[in-house]
Image 1 (cartoon, rainbow, N blue to C red):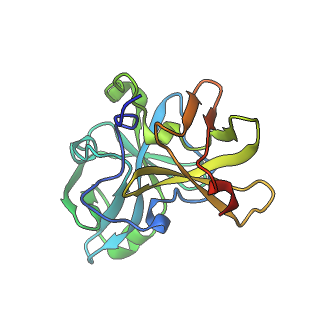
Image 2 (image 1 turned 90 degrees about the vertical axis):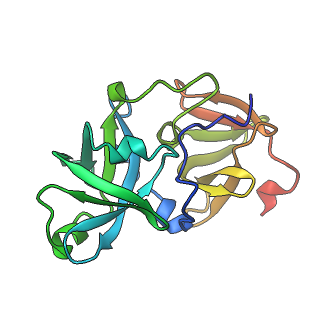
Length: 206
């Protein structure tokens, strides 16, 4: 496996905080992963005319900025709102976009936390040894000797690469930061919903 393990990652031109990268709660209310891929989420309104700041989960922002086949999904997963038209640009804080019929700051603020999705059938197939970020979220994480570490709650980038943020099953407020790197990755099985790692010495004591 090469350093191309993850092809669609957060926009490298911005430096979002871990809070911005975290998928909105509740995590269990995800769009159907068989048909939809989460490309980002609405972080906050921008300006007074209904613009939105989007935290992107892809290093190919053109997938979002083309404005095609996109939808917004509410944080509770109950409402899906197709986007009729979208215009936007890249910025240091993420993507700044305008969508049809959102014309005020109040309307934009009401969409904070909504996920931006695209039908999987409209996305390019990942190349060999590549995977969408969205497909990593919710996976079980275990060590090579069978220790269950929890599920992937969200993802973040660090200087060394992608980090899986895993919630400790025994301490709900404790997050484990697991490097998603070739030297520590034993197995990635999306069909079985699991990641098996061989953690570096001392990682699990942090």
